[in-house]
Image (cartoon, rainbow, N blue to C red; front, side, top):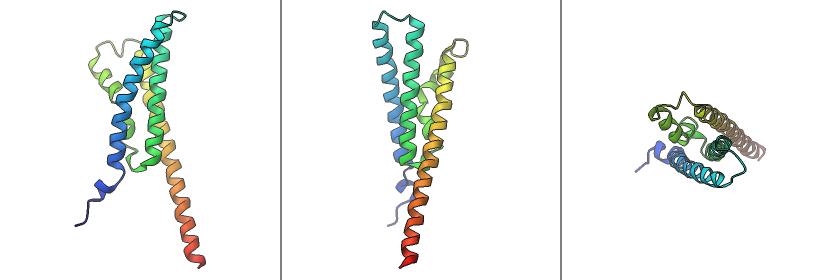
Length: 140
């Protein structure tokens, strides 16, 4: 019995890793926010900015490695990895009124750009391997 190509593709792996990245980044956001709040050298606004930058960076790093490993999941990984930010933009009433939206939306843009860079890198690697295999077959 032949399996469905959708099940065999890396799409499901990319989806699961993106959801894991979303949850892990959310935990990192709260842990870094708590850790920064314990440091009395910075004010609360600066601590919040640093925590959200760490959050955005962790999502971007996750998106890069997921899309490099599973390039078929390029369209879904940035959306799923930013699930917590998307939910907060819909649920939180003051999201668009505060400065919070700047950091979350910049994280969305960053993770999408990083995902596309990883996708193009993965496709280039795949094409180089296919070209090398073709040259080996042709030379024999």
